[in-house]
Structures are given as C-alpha cells and as structure tokens.
Image 1 (tube, rainbow over the protein chains, first blue to last red):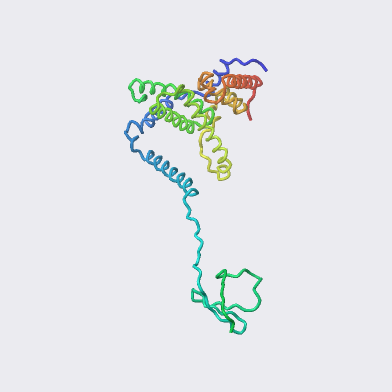
Image 2 (cartoon, each protein chain N blue to C red):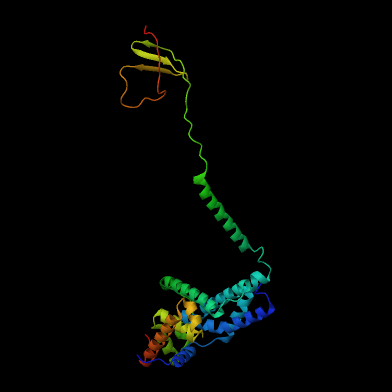
Amino acid sequence: MKEPDASDIDRRLREAFAEDAASAARIARAAVADGCAPVCRGEAAGSPRRWLVVAAVAAVLLLASAVVWWPARPVPAPVAESLAPQTLSGVIADGALVVSMPDGSVLISAGQPRTDRLPDGFSLVVFEGVQR
Amino acid sequence: MPGRGSSTTVDLDEAVGALAPRLLRYVAARLGDRSLAEDVAQESLTALVRAWRSSGPPDSPEAFVFAVARRRAGRLIWRRRLWLPLEHAARVRAAEPTPEAHTVGRDQARRVRAALARLPGRDREALLMVALGELTMTDAAASLGLSVSAAKMRVHRARARLTALLEDGYEGT
C-alpha cells in the first residue's frame, strides 16, 4: 500500500466537507446562551432539576435503610402457650370417656387410640378417678 | 467559582467560537446530515459550556467536546439504523438532502465521500477527528479512549486506505 500524503488527504477531506461558518457561529452563540442558563439565571440553587436529584437521593437512602433495617429488625420470640395444670373431671359411660374441658368443650374419647393422625387440642390429659 | 470570572468567560466564548466550525464539520461528516449535525454540535458545545462554568475549563476542551459529540453522533447513527427500515416501509422519510446531494456537481468531493464511506468505522472516525476536527493526536486519542500510538495507527491506516481507494478511482455505488 502506498504511503499516504497526510496533508493531501486531509486537504481533500476538508474540501469534500465544506465549512459552514454561519451555522458554526450560530451554534456557538446558542451553546453559550444555553450553557449559561443554570448559572447565569440564578436557577442553580433551587432549580427543579436539583430538587429532583435531592428527592431521588433521599428515596434511595430511604430504600437502602429499609433494606438494611428489615432483616435486622428485632423479632419477638414466639411465646409458647402454656396452661397451668388443672384438675379435670369426667365420666366414663358405655366405654367412652367424657371430660369437660376448661374452654367449655367436651372431650369424648372412646375405642382404640387413633393412629391415623396426631391428636389435636390438649396434648395431655391426666385424670384419675373411679370407674362407675 | 473558577468559571465565573470575566477573563474565563472571554476564554470560553473564544474556545466555543473556535471549536464550533471544526466540530460541526466533523459531526456532519459522521452523520451525513447537516441539520442533525448542527443539533449534535450545539448540544456538545452546550455540555462544554456547562462543565466549564461549573468546574472550570477541562484539561482539553477539544478532547472533551469531541468525546461528547462522538458519543451523541454514535447514538444517533444507531437510532437511525433502527428507524430507517420503518421509515422506508411507511414512506415517511423526511426529504432531507443526502450527503451526495450536497456535492452534486462536485465530482471530486463526491468521490472522497464515497471512498470515505468504504473505510472501517473506527478508522474513519479517527481520521475525521484529525482531518476535519483538527485535533492533535493526543486530543484525538483522548476523545477516542485510545493510546496516542493506537490513534496514530488508526489515522495512518485510514489515510493509506483512503489514498488507495482514491487512486483506484473508486466511484462508489
């Protein structure tokens, strides 16, 4: 490849893309006027754009603090519900145990113990008495 | 504030006035569209003015403003590539003069433009910055995000290819 003549190539390029001095001057004037706007018109201190930035920063900070705080927030430990031991009384009738429970319900238990699921309600009932 | 002194203002006005023609010519060559080029050049110069007034003059106003213009022109080129097929389909393409229309009757200029369009984009961009933007190799390298030696290599390669294309009598298609 032939060594290029830099000045010749550059000159030909400049000729191909002619300078538009009038447009350039107009652009320069407009750029200086536009670029002046935020400072020269005294809008910098309270410009809407600045408030927008402040609001955006505040929102980001709030979100970040929420993200940090939420996993670390104190979670109350689950309190195991316990009932004081109580004396229950019941009767056995026709092979079924009938007990009046403290919450007002009546427990009727009969037959073989259930094995298909765990019992619900009170987990342990201790009673004593005499079968009549 | 470094940018509010009267001498700085005068310097800024002078810098913008001197940069505008070079920038406009560079952007027009990249975009091939005079009105779009004016928009990009003005926006880029406005960015320079704002930066200058808020933080003082950049190390190299030339590198600063050409880097801004290069990015904006690149975005416009991609946007145009995206929309152009749709415009053709809808037959709503604006009746703007094409780069060729600007050079009707100027055969030599047309040939240069056609040959320039055949260069790889990166090489063409570097050459336009130096030849039309009249940037030093250091400023061109800064605008392109390259080392000076890499920028020199691109410009040299672009000139060599352009010379070869023009000597082969490339007329374009």
